[in-house]
Length: 626
Image 1 (spheres, one colour):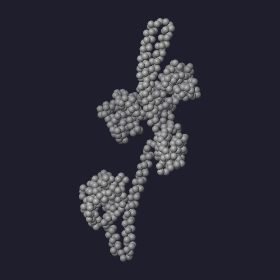
Image 2 (cartoon, rainbow, N blue to C red):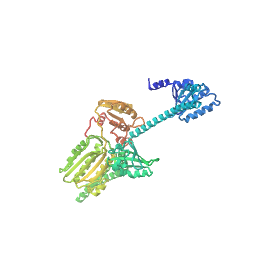
Image 3 (cartoon, rainbow, N blue to C red):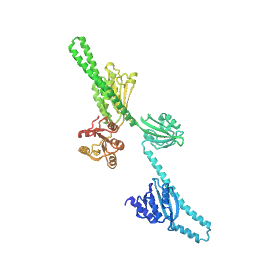
Image 4 (cartoon, one colour):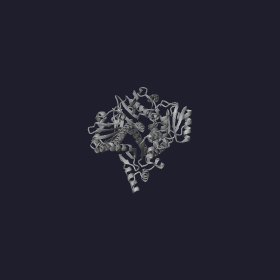
């Protein structure tokens, strides 16, 4: 028997009549005694029966005695029901029986009413009145009034108890909701002491306490308080303040809203971690800058390339026509300058043409080892290369772009060292937020001008031999990933530090259950065959909602999802919806499509169409070190 059937059976066993009408004045719940007490027909004992028709039937049946204007009577009762308030009353029916009517509104709208036949109680009171010779008339009246008052008081107490229970449940739900939110919600009074907190400060700003009730905001925030103090003072003065700041202790970027309390002196605080959003925003801004650079330089570079082609051709022809030593030297110099111009155009093309940050699982230790293998043969014999990976595991990085960037820095460091020296390349994690790669050398270090302008395009300290685009390309690569570059001097030598968003790569299973999310049945069948051939068991879904439902009930080892799916949510939301599972994405969208770009910030992406071997490598079955 279902819970609804059990509930209805229990209601039918009680002696009181019960009815519940919803906010539209339609019958929602009732028991058998309700129909029996008022002799209601079956049509009025059906879900959805209107309160108005029920009253009209009761008037016609004589429930309320003689009523001259039936429609006015019904309309008045309906108006009372729409403005329903808790009440208790006792009414003698036309058939001579007396009932008590106890009603209470429901928080969802509508009301519940309980009808109790108190005829026997009234008769006992009457019998007591007629047979008692000892009690005075006044005592009898007081007894009757006291009994009625007690019944009304009991009804009121029941209503108050229900209201208290609902208030307690509402408060519990509100606190649970605030504690589940990925943000810190709090209030401080006029003195800056916390009067409320959802205990999420430590998750937004690691290293801070969770239990902060009664603490002063300066104690809870520590050094970061100086950054928020002006905004707190502005909010205490009555002006809302929305701002961002970097928490030096955790390297997190925090967005905060300080809102004045309109009732009591104090400030409501909402703060959350926007580090990943800031990194993505920086990457998007860099992409837009590069697109603008492409528009500005592509036409000029094309025409300049044509001119260089003409110059090279004419100089070659001139070299054959003129055979004097002076002319040969001039022609050779012109050719060298033209070829150098061509190399410069190629470097400009490397910066301005479309490049995308395509993260994949990369082990920093293996990456540095490969870099040492590649770079060492190009270094002078007296220059030594050292690597130090202070971090273990795999991270989502673009191995190709990162390797090119660090190789460029190593070669620059070798030029700075000259005939002898040491180049140190290290990798470490910063506060579980950034992955930091640094290239330091024992050369003379950066000049003051280089520290200021070293990342600017075309700035060079190599005179005519440099293009000034090496560090600019490194800077461009790091900004594509949402990170940053810092130039500094050590003791001795220069140091270039690359900070990249730290995204740990979950180790992928070589077999097990794969949740395949694809809304195209034909493509889903093809990918399923590839996965089963790799030794995986496959469960299938066509939407994010369906995938999340399956993930709750199955032991899923890996999620492989298309970005574009049926339903409102894209597949790129799955890394957020299923953070405990490794999620890999696939798409036929071009690399510069906004959805493709956003998806790469959250998970590795495989571009369609792909072969079984490409899928195998993508899922780690043939994983390389970098």
